[in-house]
Image 1 (cartoon, rainbow, N blue to C red):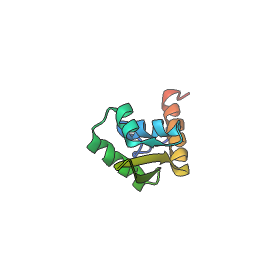
Image 2 (tube, helix red, strand yellow):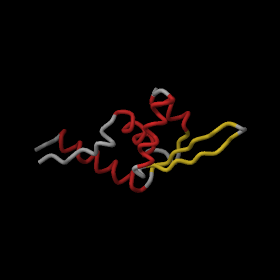
Image 3 (cartoon, rainbow, N blue to C red):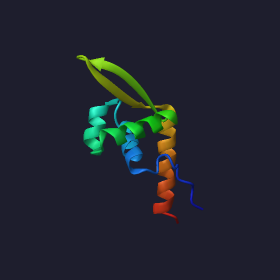
Image 4 (cartoon, rainbow, N blue to C red):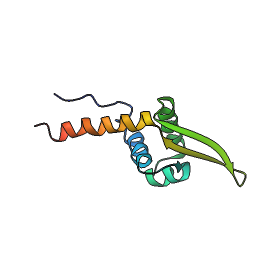
Length: 95
């Protein structure tokens, strides 16, 4: 009856990152840090997990001699996020 929840997205910080990225074209590390209120280390680890799963694309560059990490949700990530939301809806409205 209930669909399986994606264990990668069933983590508060990773779900927060994906929720933010689904609504914007790209987001830099500072933006995600501010919105998630996470620590730098934890955010970095979770971004890497999403990147390894190909849910997001990460671009590293420099801006004014400072490192700049930019994230963008991938088509695979959009599909996974939509399936996750659909599965959650089954739990909320099981009838």
